[in-house]
Image (cartoon, rainbow, N blue to C red; front, side):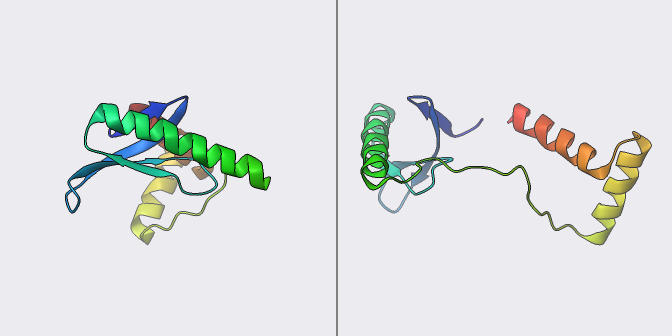
Length: 112
């Protein structure tokens, strides 16, 4: 994935904040927010480790589940013509729309 780093097995999105001229990281999949800043990649990794530890310690202290749980369900809103095209594409492959969309998302997520 582009602009994603892994710290102690947890993924974080990385971006540059021009207002403060620092690199920003934000962990994905947490039940709350844990972001961190630094002016170098090495510093960002260290700040990320600290931020993650503080977040996990706080969750343990308060009895909060630290990670989001995903149901595997979400709604997608599309223009009607895209919806129709997707239904036709799925039917042409003898798949349900759900199967077709799930496979397209999986392929895109693996390629990212």
